[in-house]
Length: 301
Image 1 (cartoon, rainbow, N blue to C red):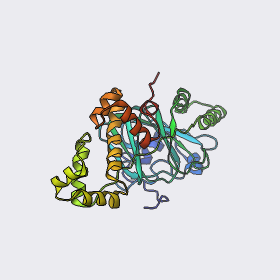
Image 2: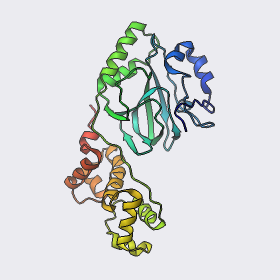
Image 3: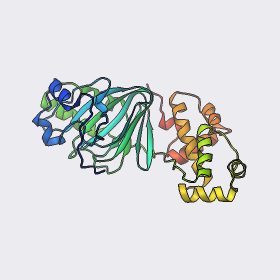
Image 4: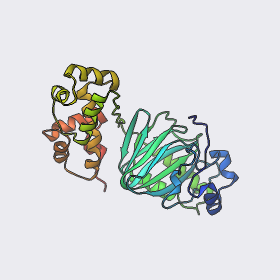
């Protein structure tokens, strides 16, 4: 699928509803192409097709508009893209953003900068609410790859401020400039847990996904699925590009994120995903994620 494609069918109300309700007109054409729904899969609802809607509001130069909507448990949007940059954030619960080579689980203290034209999926991990700023492609920090940023109190306030429809053009332009200056990258990597093709390795992966704390070695798994430890090790190396231990470590970190987001103690999460101590889990988390659990899920004040 080409990122230049602009499909707007199936937006659960469509561009017409948004345009009629919020005055979207020629002002958006210059900065944002066709506006909402760029790159949607035909016949699939776009992100603004559910929950509450807040008005995008054109600026004098078409720099930023903001959307907010609820995401019930397990709601997911299939692969899509936008002709604008997106700053995707959660105001409640966890939002999972996936691209071809990895995924991010975003708590309300983190957001993801998604460059214009980047195919991605969006899903709610539990009941959540999403708050996104869409930034014209001629604006922003120039990041070419998805980048995690910290949601500071100032950044949160600016996003909320820009939902207002009564701001004068110069006041809005000043707020937009400060918002872009407030984007501070956080050294967090995505989690990519490659899928396996061989049915024996795939069965091991399926069982570990269901029980990530299972510490059995490859030899024991081989006896379960009818393969030697050497064969399974080769399958993981060839099909996942990772050693079995590395693959399982990534799987465990992915499983740990929702528990950490719920505020469970690190030691409790460590035991749930297969680590004997909080320190060994924290070391593994830093290896995979680039930061500690506390840094990824800071306490909100």
